[in-house]
Image 1 (cartoon, helix red, strand yellow):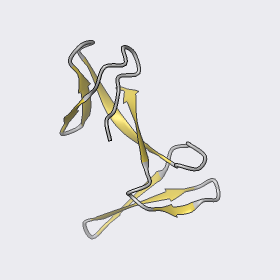
Image 2 (spheres, one colour):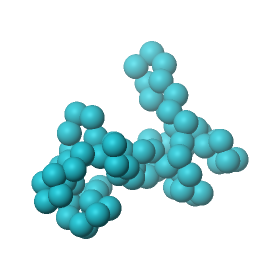
Image 3 (cartoon, helix red, strand yellow):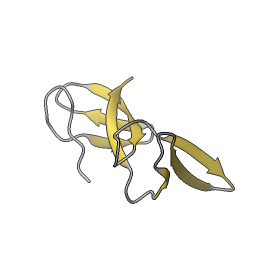
Length: 73
């Protein structure tokens, strides 16, 4: 999955805390969104596992289906 900068459209480089645009020199956090309604997901962490839950009626979402969207810090 290649993420693009929302400002310039260039590819983002992955960082420990999200993503970075070399062209714009901006850092972004990645927001998990539902593939059905595209709204932010609730992140559930327990015993080392991470699950995603859609509060808009779509229930648990597989991590393989989650859409990650860059958001300006």
